[in-house]
Image (cartoon, rainbow, N blue to C red; front, side, top):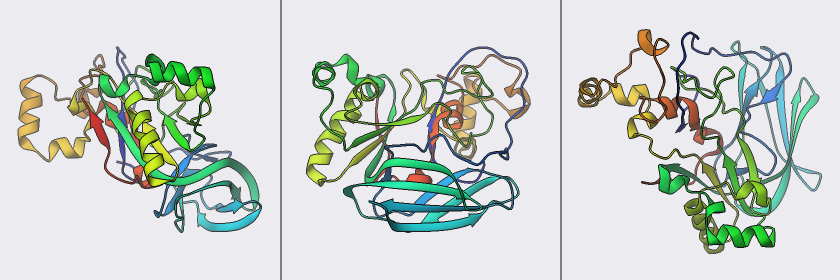
Length: 291
């Protein structure tokens, strides 16, 4: 597995070739796509930023509030090009920060509307995936234009792309999730795609905690638990391996790219494609799941 832990998601269909992805260095520096405007970092957890740049370059970050410097940090990009920069934590509040990233002193990223609060992972099957747009509350929200700037959600595609395809499944966990994006409660067109359960949870929790609440929104209806587990977790339990082999669902590396893929039942499929960087944001508590 690459450099840090976390968890999430999946897809289906046939394919033939393709080799596993390796770390890529970047001609132009960039944060991973799981960062963005209006994102939420977990309160009282280290602020961790990750992305790609050229080895040896200096990546620095400045977190500002109303133009005033609040936090800063710097790191040298390692040989594989994947940098991880850490800054000191902040408490939860309704302050909205600007986050600036620099490569050798030149700005390459400016994120706006960044907040700190309670961050949760919402994952599971159909009942968790069931979207806010399909509920009466979602219909009412669409008419009012949204009511809460301080509910934030990272929307993860049901079938993220891997090597340009939404159908291929990686053998190893990806470091990023293409087309993932952050939104807030007043961005109605986007927030209606969040899990209805997760949104209701966030709405109540924000009132109780009196701070912003963020949801990492990642589910797939009908998906097997084995698709959400890492290979390390599966292979640490001989009983699980025997179970998978007994159902003809155990897939070794030599066979991975010579078969039709099924994101719903393939072992590690969703973990490898939809896992989220809980180390990056520091989720407030364990993921909550709903079957």
